[in-house]
Length: 401
Ligand code: BGC
Image (tube, rainbow, N blue to C red):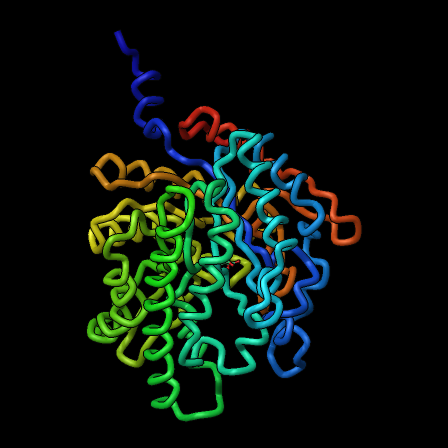
C-alpha cells in the first residue's frame, strides 16, 4: 500500500540516472587568462567591462577543491570548459602541458565518480584569432575544429559528455554592439557569424566523433521564454528564427541539446520590450521567471527531437533563500515536463562558485558557494547543501526552514 506521502515523494522524484551537476567556465573561474578577447575587453576602458577577471577564483590551481565540492555535495557531474587560448596560445602551437592540466581535471572527476561534462568553447577566443577577425575570419570554424581535434585526442577517453560551443547563438548578437557600422551592416554580420558558428559546431562534432572515446556530443543554446506583446508577434517570430530556430536546425545528428534559460523576454512592434513595470528582477536585471526553464526545455525538445540536457540554470542574487526558492520552482517545472514525456537527461546549476560575470565583473552572485576575493576560500551557502540533498535523493526535497 502506498500512502499519500509516498505518492507525493514519487511524483517529485527524478528518473534513474538523471544527471545532477553544477557548471563553471574556464575564464570565469581560472584566473590569469591573459591571452583571450575577454581579457582584452576587461582592460579596454571603452568596453564597458566593470573590472578585470584577474585571478578570478584561482581555479587554475584550486580545481581539486572544486571537484571536492562537487563530489562532497553528492553531485554526479561537473560541467567545466577548456580555455582555448591556454591550449593553443599561438596559432598552430599547442601546449601539451595545458592539455595535461585538463586531463588531470577529467581524471580527478572520474576518480570521484563525477562525470566530466566538457565544453570546448565558452565565450572566450584566443587573441591570435580575434586579431584577424575572430569568428568573422573566413577560416575560424576550421581553426576551432583543429583545436577540438587536438584537445579531443588528448582528453576524449575521459570525457563524459561534450558541449562543442556554449551558447553559440549569442556570439553573433555581439555584432549588433560593434557600434562602428550601420544597423544593416551589423545585422548582416550577425547572420554571417551565426552561419560560422553552425559550421564550427558541425566540424567540432565530426572532430570529436573521429577521436577517442564515445560520449554524447551537442551544443548549448541560450534561450529565453519569448512572449509577444500586442503587435509584436511577427517581431517575435523573426527573433526566434535568428536567435534559436537556426540553431535547432543545426543539431541534426547530435546526441543532445544543451538548454540554458534564465528568464523571459517580451517583444513589441519595435523589437525587444522592457520588462513589465514592477515585475521582480534579479541582480542581472532579468525578470524573476523560473517557469522559463520548463518552457524552453519543452520547446527545444519539440524543435529538435533529441534529448535535452539543462546545462545551466540559476539566479544572480545575494539572497540565498531566494536561490533555493527559484531552483525548487525550476525543478517543479522540469518534473512537469518529464511527466509529459519530454526527454530531459540532467540539470546543472549555474554556478558552482560566485565568479566573474563577464562585463558585470564579480558583482552578480550566481554561486552555490561564495569565494573570498582575497584568499579564494570557498564557503558553501545553504543552497549548496539543499541542492546536494536533492541530488542524493534524486528527488525534490523540501527547502530548509
Ligand atoms: C553563460 C555564463 C554566464 C551565465 C549567467 C550564461 O549565459 O553561459 O557564462 O555566466 O549565463 O549570466
